[in-house]
Each structure stands twice: as C-alpha cells, then as structure tokens.
Length: 59
Ligand SMILES: [Zn+2]
Image (cartoon, rainbow, N blue to C red; front, side, top):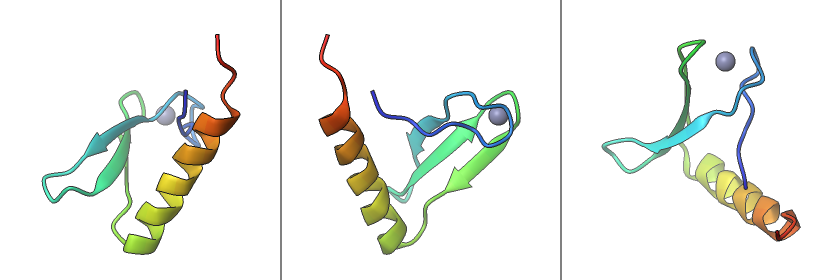
C-alpha cells in the first residue's frame, strides 16, 4: 500500500497516468491535480513507491 496524502484534506491522492505517460495525482474533494513532469521527480516517485512497498506490512 503506497500513497501520498493530500496536503489539504489528508485523503489518499489517486495516482493516474497522463496521456504523455507521466504520473500525476488527484484529490477529488479538493480538486487538486499534482503533476510530476520531470524525470527527476518521476525517479523520486518510483523510489518512494519502492520504499513504501518494501516497508509495507504483509497481511
Ligand atoms: Zn484533498
């Protein structure tokens, strides 16, 4: 389970992929769209997701 919380409401941001293949996050209640456009950001996001998966508690 890996997600980023919305900085306004703390809800789980939904990860989506744009038409250009770049990841972005949306918070439906707040109407926030958070785009990760640069390669560095995408790499950091991948690292974050990997780290979160590694640290996830298996049920
Ligand atoms: Zn929100």
